[in-house]
Image (cartoon, rainbow, N blue to C red; front, side, top):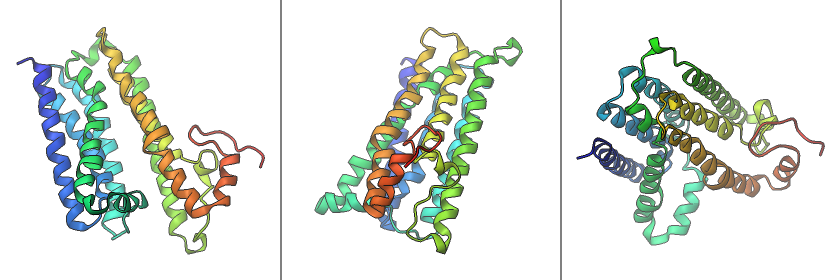
Length: 269
């Protein structure tokens, strides 16, 4: 069997199995928000499979695996600590799904949420595929793309971590109950966490461009997919709908002065 086909079949099988376990965990806890914890881990697992089965050098594989696992552990750990371990109520996105799914709630969560996200995780495999066959040796001084990608990755991790911390601290303060978080990074973007998440994936996508493969640009498909997901499908639209429902005109005013995604100085209200 072709090595790439073998790697991809293994990755698909892992994704289905892992997401099935996450679904069972969410069902047993009556909290399907565990999918947010599983998102980072399933992607890191897929990256590890391509690395383990590929013919690239260990340096090339680590150039991708290290940032992916740092991202996954930080994101999944933060979400578990703040939304699952503490008995946090199920995220409104998923409680709304429960109302929509009715009697088919568990089956539809399995297919429409967990398996779907497993499929979307596979769409982000471009950098993993390229790196798995990349014959990189640091002594060759091919550092431009890895260094650029690494810097963007670190900026993204720091920015996303700061945005998450600022929002969590704001919401935890009793004096801010019912208020809108528009301080720190949230003053310059309505969703700075999503923006920096995209920066992380832009960095990961750039790293393996140094491979020189004619098909290496496929790694940039990952940040493109992530941008579409965050900006137009699962990120910003869901968050905006929830904020409009809970904050009403206060959030509408925030929309008029603050960019949705890319950070910039606030406009006059």
